[in-house]
Amino acid sequence: MKKIILSIILVLMLSVSFAASVETLMDNVTDLEFQFEGLMAQDEASYLAERDRAAVAREELTQQRAIQTQLNSRIASVRNMRGDQYKELAARYNETLKELQGQIRENEKIVSDFAKLEARRNPPAAGNSTRRK
Image (cartoon, rainbow, N blue to C red; front, side, top):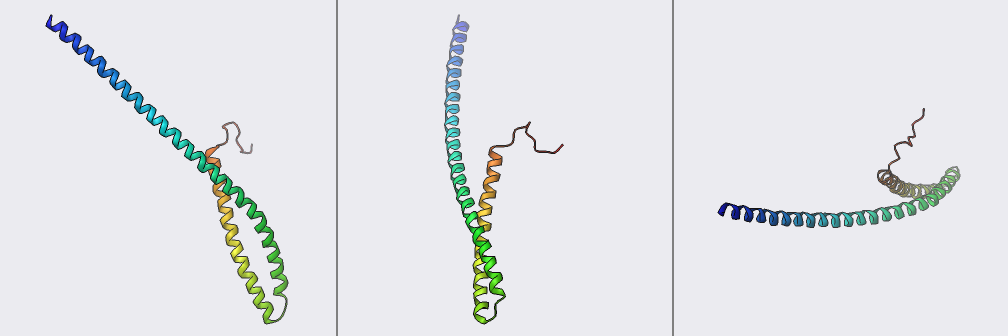
């Protein structure tokens, strides 16, 4: 009789222990899901910020390239003129052009980095290969 009672007690203890471990496991899963959702929200916010930053950079690039064309044209005409004043002016145009080219490189990098981010985030579908046949 003692063996039966001990067996029943052991089974009850194992059942309670199993139920507690399942509950702990479910709590852990719930916590992991909460953390996952939080990370997904952060990732989405970061993506949207980078998308907006790239859009601004694209717009600036359009304007900067127009200015670059204008500066190159002006430098070409000033370079052919004689006199120290024109040489000084040409040097200032060149300095401005170098500064502009640096800004263009920065904006091109922003656009390029976003394109890479977008490609990682939205890989092409398996059936839509761009290879030539």
